Amino acid sequence: MTEKQHQPLKVSRRDFVKGAAAGATFLAGASAMTSCGSAAPVPASGLPEKWDGEADVVIAGFGGAGAAAAIEAAEAGAKVLVLERTPTGGGSTAICGGIIYMGGGTPLQRALGFEDSRDNMYNYIFASAGDGADEELIGLFCDKSLELYDWVTGLGVQFNESFMEMKAAGVPTGDGLLYSGNEKQAQYAAVADPTPRGHGAFADGRVGGHAIFAPLKVAVEASGAEVIYEALVRSLVVNAEGRVVGLEAEIDGESKYYKANKGVILCAGGYAANAEMVELHCPECLRCAANVGTPGDDGSGIRMGQGAGGDVRMLGETAPFAFVYGSAECLCRSILVNGKGQRFVGEDNYGEWVGDLIVREHNVAYLVLDDAVWGMVPEASKEYLTVVGQADTIAELAQGLGIEPGLLENTVQLYNEYAAEGEDPLFHKESTYVVPLETPPFYALFFGVEATAFFTNGGLRINPKSQVLDVNGEPVPGLYAAGRNAFAIPARHYVASGVAVAEVLTFGRIAGQNASAEEPGQ
Image 1 (cartoon, rainbow, N blue to C red):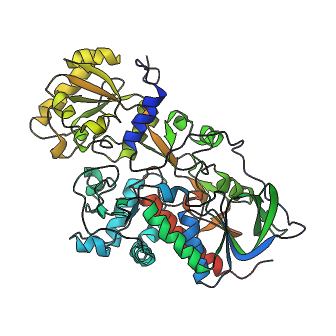
Image 2 (cartoon, helix red, strand yellow):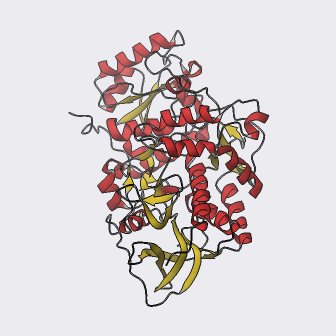
Image 3 (cartoon, helix red, strand yellow):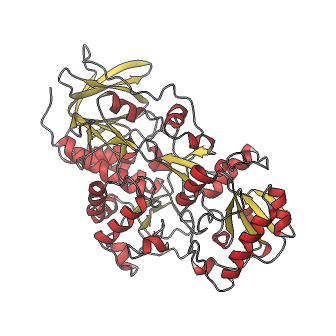
């Protein structure tokens, strides 16, 4: 029986979703996939008989990227129009865990005694992003990080001057600075000095996306930019010369056309909510419990960009999450095994590394722990864990899971031998979490594919100006993209919590700056 076929236990959909909640608590928003009709590019529209509105810069989507673009374009003196499909805006930024990944020596890092540099930040991100990482865009992202800190704090985003000592998927403590990725893992610590870069935005008594988007929204309203809500963008408008000159949107059931004298910026989210695109580009994620984001992450912005001649990069790359420490830090003292009873990752790894291995390679996974660890888990946290096995011996536990008893026994025995010395030579887990598992009864928690949640990394190909590029690497005239509509920082891996928010703000700003600087088109 192959690992893919190995499914000895039946776990309810409720348990799947419960497991995903435990594994991705830092990501406040999660929604089900829906059938959105197509994964194909959306053909561009020709010039309409008349325009229903006009601006210098027209933006599709009012999340973090759209807001950042609008603020910058308006500040440059451009007339700005934003079209947003929902009644309130916010996108995934408004419902995220509230972390912004910034480094290079931010005032908060320095105040709390942590040293960092642009190059140190770059070395970690480039190494951890993996295959396909874009050196130029990552370099620009790091160049702009200190500027981003000044910009968001200038808008009123607040960070508490405190460091979170514990390991958690979110920021339950309300602290302003934390390690939010794999910075301390041995393979990355070898290329970049470990430094915390997760900045937790705080408002109304907690860290969360509201603390980021609310100040952005206030700034957009103060900038003079116009926002039309409940306006569903349907297609881009391209003239005879191939320039994007506007877009078509559905408002109150009618088609409306809006002219962009300088440029259109696509900020309409990823495609994790579009089942057809997921099946085409990353079918392994169809079994994930949920996608992280909003129903608006239907890939429409990417598909419209393709229809106007835009190229795409790494559409098949996703970020599946499964945090071992999502419910309680003490669970890092457990061991995570696949359907053959083998360990395959250090349990204190950032949740994207764990989820990625489960979804792409192992399919079935169980967290094995003893009664000593189980006793450390807060009672409230146990509600979010799916116990699928309990036994007085490892052999009996294995039998209940459908694993060959000898295999799991060997795994636990080897782990315990090294753990007695505080060592983990196979996966280099932090010594704090390396303890023998010896106290019965023993437990198994479900950590399979169905206990993961995901979002997408790939998108339209852009250059350092956030211009959308065609298959020849040339800019599509008049078209920009930012946020999950564009491929920029995450590649094979999503490198740390808060990178997506920092990315959408950084490249949203760049798109707004450059679109507003264009000469008016035709």
